[in-house]
Image (cartoon, rainbow, N blue to C red; front, side, top):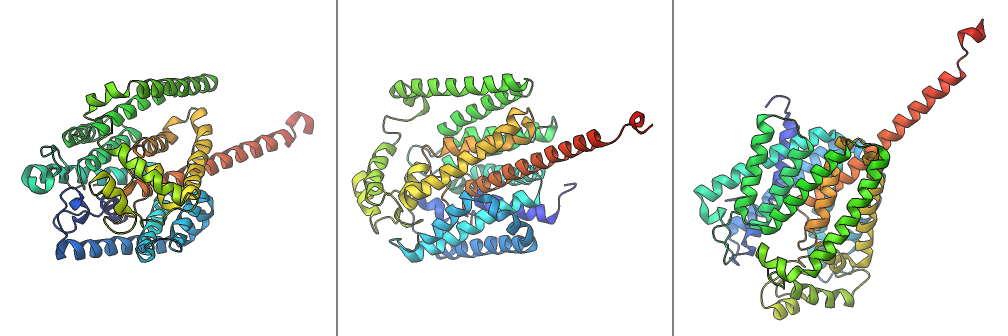
Length: 433
């Protein structure tokens, strides 16, 4: 492909690895065994370790090549950096300290890779790299689902015709395809490649059978239309539109909550959200036990080991996470961790708002999509605190992109003021005469 460097391809491969959570078909599908409860083979176990080491080594190589630039911007990350420090520090009070430190180091490395993407590439080039990764994943999913159905179709009861493809399960497939459509919309230019890939992503998302993905895709499309309207308004009208949208979302959320028992069957869910409410009740019990610092990063969900066994016994099936990203942060890192995430998220919107208000929507649309997807998907899944998951990388890159936008705008305003001051102080020809 014209204009694509080896560095671009390497970054795309790393992003694809994170999108699959390391579950490389035929090599390291260990995490895909969550739904089948099949014991890991030697190939799965050692293949997973080796593939993770290769990816972490590649990330370290990229980081070392641009170490000065990354270190210069590290301080701008503030709350995200503090969250990573807390993740590593939680080894001290973790119930499984060796497990925490073993996962917290790759978690920190993945965050640095997100920062590297932002400081190394402009946003449009980042989107091109993401697009390449998502196209490869969509093609791989089609091939596995059609040619290797034992691997490509979801193995959980009642979902044997749903596609999981190269991902750990059908919901992960749907989630990544929603992110893929957001990539296309953010880099939109009318072309056969964009239209074809967008339709392909929608097709794979539909075949995943993930009802949640269908709903969130509708939200992304509505948001895209809203931003297109906002781009054509003046500053004051954009403020009015933002306030009206927030009010309408609040009213809609209240209505959905009120009529939830009637709406859930329409998306294939029952009143317990497929057992999630019972998990949330059990998780809350353990949050209350350690509310400030939590149980340690990646240290609670150990199957029948440790305190997670009590949750397993209560819900009567193996649980791998809290099925709510915000509860998961509170459970593992306490209220302190949740506060650090909330501060990073609020700062991102505060810094992004002037860009959106100015009408320069194209510069901020990708960041808007990511922030909205983080909020929506973490309502009933854990997408953020995964040491080899894509959303953590994308979130850190988004925070860094927003900081870079703010610096660019300050520089432009400063140059404008300097030019204005120079023009005002320059003597006119008449005065000189």
